[in-house]
Picture (cartoon, rainbow, N blue to C red):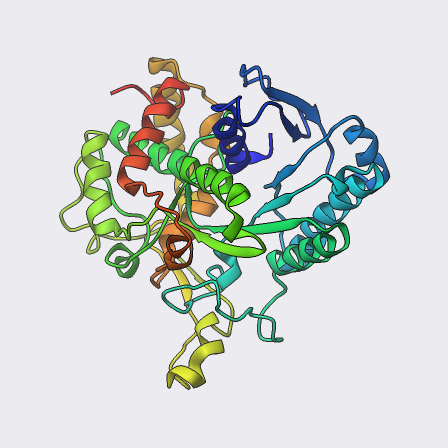
Length: 392
């Protein structure tokens, strides 16, 4: 199953077998997680050639396609090449076996890297009409290549398309620990095991700043809506929960949820394992500077963390605390090393706000909303059931 967002889409569609009689779920390895009678799992290697994929796709018919696959790479150039080629070859394979002639709409899942949130200060609020960051000051963006490929194939095969831009996804995927909620929960439970307070590992600026996040299940509901809504055809949409959150309110809730206190002086305490990483030399906001009257006022941003979580997770006392906790509570011991500490460094170490507009989807009738803290709560409950963190 193609990751957390793909899993959520499959499970959402499976709830309504009268509407979605047969759902073909493709991944490199069958998960055997789903028991719904309308789900058919297949193996598919998206790194293969169009011809190899066509063999794996033989016998499959589809009217709606949801593509959420993503392969992380060390550079933006590599990510653009690999992820663009995966989509290109997949759509070509559909043409080779004649499936594309029956397809009504393809939904492509991307993200808010669309706006350069990984490069520095973006324009706020982020809107779907914002210009693409294609000038030489910015690295290649594989979302741009994927969208160009999708639109090209749509014109040739005469199907409609939709692109989604989720951000900072909150959710849980079976045996997939590359997500925000898992890393935050592990950080909290180990901090408690060490009899320490809960110190925000990022920086004070972002702690007091604002972010918009995406519940994986809400995103799945949006994808279903966008696949079927006539007015959504051939458009891209931001997909976030609908609230704007700040860690100044969520961090105390997190501490209470796990039975630990926030250090009263957390930003005055020593920070021996701090992290500072400069981001792109030119900020995304600079692309809008002239029209906004901000010429010369868009400095380079950086990631600033009081605690480098990759170093924290490697400390002997931290590893010992996790092992002790996992054995005592009967938890899956390997999850700690699989957690994406570097990703959490990035999420919490940003020094700028991320405000994402939902006006476009709202204007077309989308009304979905999720309270972001409630989304985290439900993820933590699921992590307890999965044996990843101890039960309350």
